[in-house]
Image 1 (cartoon, rainbow, N blue to C red):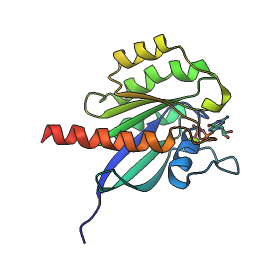
Image 2: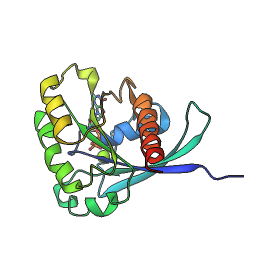
Image 3: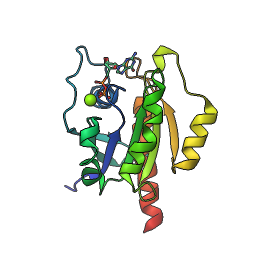
Image 4: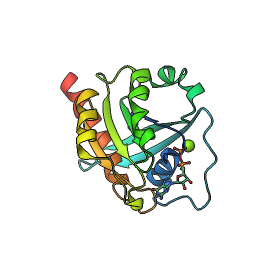
Length: 174
Ligand SMILES: Nc1nc2c(ncn2[C@@H]2O[C@H](COP(=O)(O)OP(=O)(O)O)[C@@H](O)[C@H]2O)c(=O)[nH]1
Ligand SMILES: [Mg+2]
């Protein structure tokens, strides 16, 4: 039996923007019933997904805690990743502004596929499209998604799209 191809994805962003809830949605297709423990350092999970062409891909997900003191180890864990999810909570604008710093610490956005992800869409708050576009142009963002871990809006779509883009990029490099 051949082994599934795998890709590595890192999720970054400030504390409590909903990163772990998003990962929980990716894994279990439901919202956590209990509040998740705050992530210390990072959490690691693997989710297998089937693409439209029938390929099965193992997505290795690294969910980063978001504590400033862990930013120093962030580049070490993300140095060989294929995809980056930068998550922010639109009801707390500072979590969006903080992403400039996160991507700077990351430092290898030209090598990976990068998605900007707004969480908690169910709250009905959003960051202006002008600011989103500015950020995208400044930082090599491939795509932008608005998601909700509560309703499941765009969560599976985001993961499928990210993996598809990662594989396309790898193919173009061959
Ligand atoms: N309204 C709403 N709240 C959410 C959503 N996702 C997460 N939360 C809440 O936001 C808080 C932080 O979530 P968590 O996933 O632990 O954030 P993390 O620190 O970035 O991993 C928790 O109280 C969650 O219940 C969402 O899609 N909608
Ligand atoms: Mg967490």
